[in-house]
Amino acid sequence: MHCYENLVNCLTCWLILMGVIHLLTHRKIQSSYGRHMALSPPVRTVPARLAWFIQEVPALVIPLLLMVTSQKPSIIGIYMVLGTFSLHYFQRTVIYSLLIKGKPFPLSTMVAGAIFCILNGSLQGHYLLHCSPLDDEWSADYRCRTGLVVFYVGMAINIHSDYILRNLRKPGEEAYKIPTGGLFEYVSGANYLGEIIEWFGFALATWSLPALAFALFTLSFIGPRAYYHHRFYQEKFKDYPKIRKALIPFII
Image (cartoon, rainbow, N blue to C red; front, side):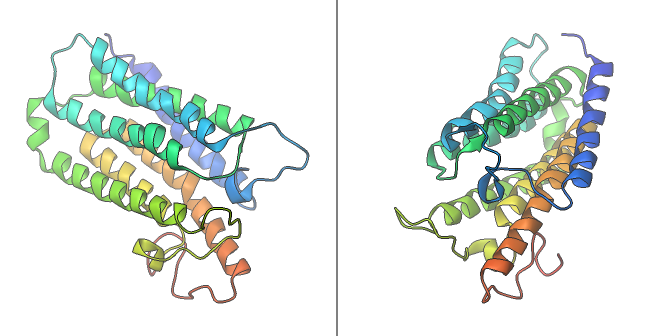
């Protein structure tokens, strides 16, 4: 398949622009899902498990289809880094969506998430398979290896933090509790920190502008959410640990 360079550049700029717009438009209020969801006026919602599956599955399926249908010779380094992208979305689509216990999602949020995953999955997959200059020796490059280590460290933090959050409340309990253990001892958004680390590791491993744009978008989208979670805990719990920061241990 031909490299659609102009389209890749447009989508890359779109990711960066969307991150900036989100930062500017969500300085005082967060996206309406989870604990920040406002149901006035009434909105149509989708069960959390179904919503997560539908919105995340395009980012799993599209890169896999592109890999299967690609007629270019297989390059180990490219398949390795694109495989990490697919692994993340396998975990989010198949495992996380089955385990989540969250509130129903607004239908509009789910649709927006699905559209994003379609575009981003297509961008990352197409660029790596048809535009990237990486060759067979890339898998031995220190940037690839370091990036993959960073990615898997972030993924481990993200999965472990999600496990802590899922097990905060016993069956039937609805009251919020203070998360403890792991990086939650240092930050309120440990799960978000893990995912941000993942995508910056992916950007390093791919050494590509589209991946860096995605990492910056992730930081712009869920970084502020960690701040609002932190403020929520501080307002709700008078004994909330003062040493704990929002996103980066000991800093912010």
